[in-house]
Amino acid sequence: MAYTVQRGDTIAHVTKLLGSDWQTLKERNPKAVGRSKVNGNWFLREGATVSVRPDFATALSAAQNSDGTKKAAASFPAQPDKAAQAAPGERVHTLQAGETVWELGVKVYHVDPAEILKLNNISDPRSLPIGKILRIPNPPARPEKEAVVASWYGGFHHGLPMANGQPFDMYAPTIAHKEIPLGTRVLLENPQTGEKVRATVTDRGPYIDGRDVDLSYQLAKQLSLEEQGVGSLILQVL
Image (tube, rainbow, N blue to C red; front, side, top):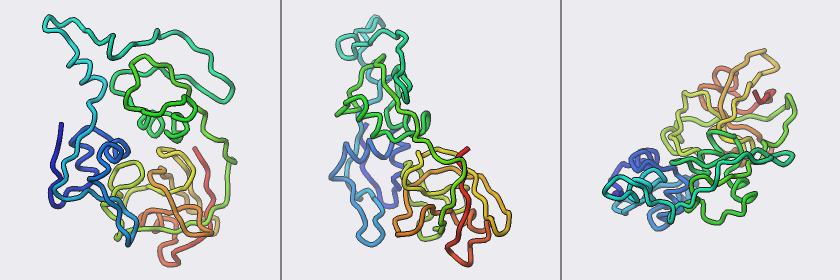
């Protein structure tokens, strides 16, 4: 499916329309994307035509004979779904129809998709066969609780795409962190007030020296950091 970017289209809208994710869309259409020199945010160029590779389910459907029998073996040589022994610090996953390395990393196992590609020596994640057994690294160990310096972001970024491909909602319980896998749930506490909130890592940042976490505007209000802008919190991965 191909789509021509219209005025006002957001990255989240186009990725949803194409049934894809931001990383795939960006890699497949490098001439259709740009990045603001002012704030570093990505955008789609108006009038550009974008498309993505059909997912596994679509490809399999197209590979069927008219009598309904599948001839996908040549295009998608499935490996036996046999039990595999995971090495220390790893898990294994048998790739199913429609799954992507990006979704497995971000939404299922909460590890950096790039680490999955590196561990499995994958150069093109769009050509993986159904049934391929992937080695999945375990998330890096983190201290039970750690002190972090937090700031917040709000209206200027509201509606813009985050690292997970979804639009930023300044009123949602979300945070940005440079290392914790996207999708990870955390508990944040203001040690001065005793206020606690639960949040989800959805974005990357902050990129200012001395800061560890960027909170949504709503979280900053709940943790009494709205006015001072920057403060110390206790972070715990759940």
